[in-house]
Length: 499
Ligand code: FAD
Image (cartoon, rainbow, N blue to C red; front, side, top):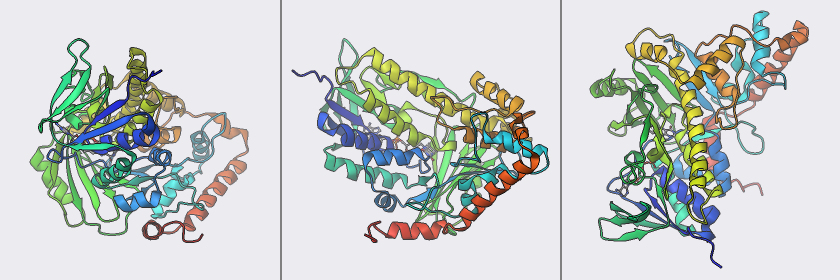
């Protein structure tokens, strides 16, 4: 008896989203489904999206991708976090690292101990107690059997799409080159039945995945799903991107440097550096942004600066009828914390868990949409936090960010930290306590009080515990190789040289 109603999956679009979804579905559900992917070389991809977070490693492991092969193919470097410059005040600098800070107990997180030490006149910087942060500062890195750093990658976006395509096609994904001219729907239900290409070819399917980027050809232009606009919280709406030659060894972190009307990214790869200025067009014209970027980038420009427009927000339903949107078609928060590629990966993982073999139902779609929404709202709050908690008085952009109304969920978090130094990670939250604490403190949110657990031990004992912890980390960092040197040798080897 055949109880599988959904078998033919059609992916529209072949950017990072399209090929990530194709790779996951083909490798995990391959024998149960047929997968076609339509993409248009003429339209091309957005060409940015080069900084990731550590969850990418779990996803690669699920697919069985070889790390060295992936890194060689995408000219990737290692990433231990993000360096924030000039965010709370011009001249400020802090790290959001991927590491764990100090040691937490059941009673409270490490920041309470540290704040107690500070109150007693010692303790140094919070970052002294984070291995990843110290390694990033020192430009050092190690992975493999001897490494215990939590890390992600910087990668070449175009090469990543190519790499995933090379992985997916041998697994049976049928790639169709061509421009989608029409999306055909069933007259009664509105379900999508087929994509008609300009060439005349018709691609029929049971389930359609919209990865067509900002245009949302299926989810929006066809199904009119609607968009929840977040520009009143995240008012940057433009980016101008350029690639430059490296001027020194690749640092194992992304840099996010604030400017008058937004911020600038710097992402070091093996063969070049990715740069871009994110800005609010209300406060900075395209010409001014162009001039600012070209003046601020280090190294010779390898490409012409390219302007990209976006609107922060989320598609009201990522899953509507028999269409599911991933990537930019499903919404866009802001690239500040490098979360978009993660969202594609976690999204397709969820789709595989809820795959509608027996047919699309409201229950499946509702569950998928609720989980996606909660997750995205948590990320949204985390990003608003960076903008909102600022003390910059040098431009109207920062003033507005500081004075704007923020979501209640974020206001509650800020109050909790301000009143008692408490931070938390709910089940649907991507960012851990360490992330919230680093950014809140980095943005100069000073807690008025903290848990007194540090007073349960004599001050000398607290001092010794912190001194030992700091020394252990410094000792471990001193033993690590330089990031660039490790990167070169790691990518040059197969990993099987020693047996
Ligand atoms: P696209 O790359 O736009 O791909 C769309 C695809 O659809 C293309 O293949 C195109 O040919 C196809 N297509 C469209 N219309 C048609 C048609 N009619 N017929 C046939 N094919 C069609 N994410 C991160 O995780 N980290 C970052 O550091 C980061 N930085 C970013 C910086 C900026 C400024 C922006 C805008 C985004 C950034 N992102 C980042 C997000 C990241 O770029 C995207 O999530 C990722 O590239 C996925 O894009 P996509 O595949 O959805 O869209």
